[in-house]
Length: 168
Image (cartoon, rainbow, N blue to C red; front, top):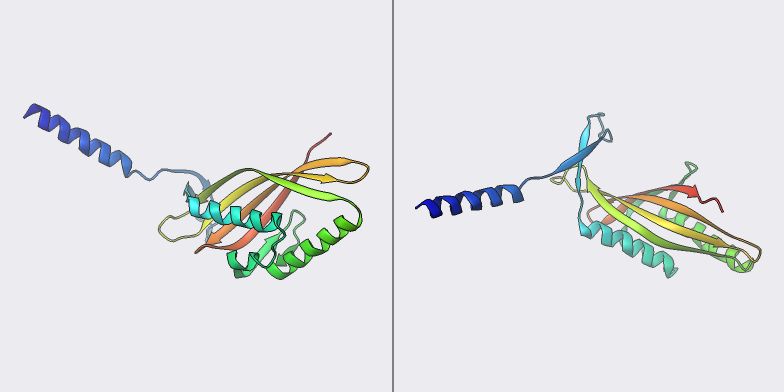
């Protein structure tokens, strides 16, 4: 009887610990300015961001249409905002300019994580950090690109980009 009681207590404790939703931090991203907590996101949204990176690495700009919402917005480090079409056009123009000048821009993902403000409503924020290397015939420079993605129902809705130079 004593062992049954202890086993039951252990099972209840174990089950109870597995159902604790852990939240951390704070944000006031809510529409009314209410302070919200962050929860761990899902691997599915990380996979969407990896697909974004894959399409860009392959220069498969048509593929981006599969993973972006129709109203997707890109907001760059300087505050300029673009649509998906403008983003694609800028990348094609950049690729052409780099090739014409015998230059390259390569980037390597360094880390990614996903957080969720409310796991019951959907939508996650994914942060991906890149190490970018820009090479010209005369020099080479590097910078970190920090991209924040908002993903809703498997589609990227918004991308915010911030850069940090690396001093050589």
